[in-house]
Amino acid sequence: MTAQDAEALLEARGIVKIFGQHRALDDVSFALRAGEVHALLGENGAGKSTLIKILTGAYRPDGGEVRLQGAPVSFRDPLHAQSHGIGTVYQEVNLLPNRSVAENLFLGHQPTRWGLVRRKEIEARARNILVTYGLDIDVREELSSFSVAVQQIVAIARAVELSGKVLVLDEPTASLDRNEVDRLFDVIRSLKARGLGIIFITHFLDQVFALADRVTILRNGRKIATHALTEVNTTDVVRMMLGKDVAFDHHLTGLAGATHGAPCVRFAGLGRKGSVAPFTLDVHEGEVVGVAGLLGSGRTEMARLMFGIDLADSGQITVDGKPATIRNPAQAVAAGFGFCPEDRKLDGIFGELSVRENIIIALQAKLGWFRALNREDQIDLAGRYADALDIRAANHDMPVKLLSGGNQQKVILARWLAIDPSFLILDEPTRGIDVGAHAEIVRTINRLREEGLGLFVISSELDEVVAYSNRVVVMRDRQMVAELTGADVAPDRIVQAIAGTPVLPVSAVAEVAP
Image (tube, rainbow, N blue to C red; front, top):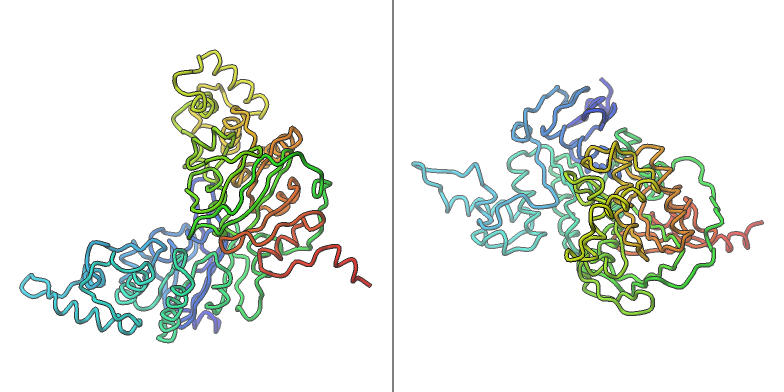
């Protein structure tokens, strides 16, 4: 046993987890020490949630082992893990809002006498516990009467009382303002000083560097690295998360800086409090605006505001030079907008409906149900777009859920192309599809741009964004922090903007070069 193994409070060794044909975790090791805050980072699909569920007993590993204080453990479920000292607090507070603070703290383990709950004792103990967390509140009040930050602290206090060795915090600051984050961090530091090991999952890198001692980065189900935060900077972390830990080249494609048509849509000061800060952006005919940023940076929230899924509380939208009201997706479709969401299974396809029905459904909604497409028109429309996008299905009347992920993505794209849009939003259009389908989607994006369509494309793949974008906007901390054009449309420039490193224009670099 190495010295590092000996000091591990909670450890995962060579963890493997397989779901069907998908290897969610592949030989992942992780060690948490007592009295440290250890950040666990990674993009969607990196394996963070799966690893946490194994450490907290929600899943059992298919290979490897979990150790607690040096001894192998096998948890039956989260309650079993909790009994061994491991507690978890999620972004959405998992307590009872209509019960008092004191009742929530002792829910399931209330002190009783002759079968009756000793309420005064509960309230006195709750007050004493919360004072140690800096909370002086009336514990008899319903939990819902307090702010999200206070509810988070109550949830943490409950988890510590029930467990007391390891605390897992999964996105605890996502709904908090800056002052509330500072307050929560004070609580976390006090728990660290008491010797708890704390696993901290977040998408806010500034918070990682402000709070954590070490960071472990996962990508595509594998552990990339573990570092002390004193050994790396923000740019290093972003590169490891995105897979950009090799040389960065400028990939000038001839697209950046190309001339475009008239603006097809303008978003002026569009924003929503707590979701994404107001932004202003024009998208022109025949232009692809790429969107880069880490998960949780506000990329998807930006798209949802554009399409009216979330209601903006500021700003104005102009379509073809005329003010447009877009307060819901129906109005967005009427304005000529299309939207392919990130989660195609949950938000995109209608799994039980046929390929044909999935393709024609947006056009039918736009026409209205009193102008129903007859079956012959449906077959013709579905056939044309299936051929154009190379949708591979045994027949167009088969349920779309039976198609591969790549073909499902093409079906969603066909749906929106069928309404002849002027503006198309694509959120992670190539995620989770095979190489062939990936290449076909990228070719389709380029073809649509050449045909004069304005596109807003979100992607975590930086090389992909650079390959088809005329401009790239960068999101960080729920606001648009950079707009890159010309020679600055390159992976290294994007990483610098995501990390918060000042981006010196290429022209300026050329001027000062020896």
